[in-house]
Length: 207
Image (cartoon, rainbow, N blue to C red; front, side, top):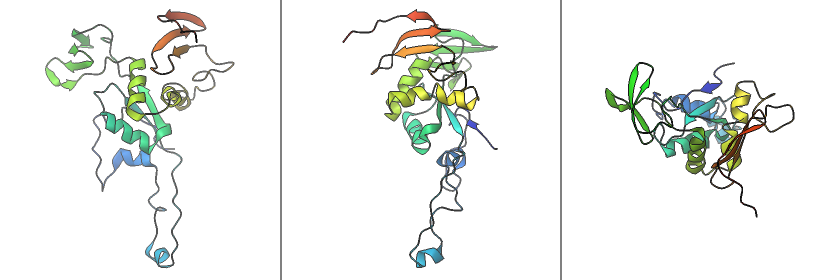
C-alpha cells in the first residue's frame, strides 16, 4: 500500500528541511520509531536495532543536467540506490535542433539541451534529451556501474509497471527489444525491435 513512485523527483517539490524531510525522507526509508536508542536503553548500554523500511518507492529522475543538479542525483541514489528510474521528459522537439517549436499550444525555444517557454525564458518547458544521454549522465553523476545505469531504464521500470514477466530482461519469453551499448562510454551501437535490427550506426571493434 502507499506510493510506489515519486515522479520527476525534485521537480516542483518542496525543498528538504532538517525538521521536515518530505519526499526525500521516504527514500531514506528509516522508521523513526525504531532508530537510535531511548534514554533508558542508553543507560543500560544497549542500542535499539536500526531497521529500514523495505517498501520504499521508486523515484524517476530526468538526468539531462538541467532538471536536477548532479549532486542532487547523487544524493537521491545514495539514499535509495535500487530505486532510481530514468525518464527523459522529452518533448516532440527532441532531435530537431535549436529554434522555436510547439509543445501543445505553447511556444517553446530550444537552445542546445535547454528548452524553455517562449514567454517565460527562465521556465523549463520539458526536455530534449534522449534516453541514452540520460543513461550516460546518470552513469557520470553517480559513478555507478554500467549495469546499475541500465537497470534504471530496464528491469526497474518493468517491475514498477508489473510487466517484468515480458520486458526488462534479456530472457527467453521476453520481448526482443534490445539496445547494444559500448561498454565504457555507453554509446548506442545497435538497436533491435521485435528481434529485428533497426539501427546500426557503429560496428564493434574486434579484439
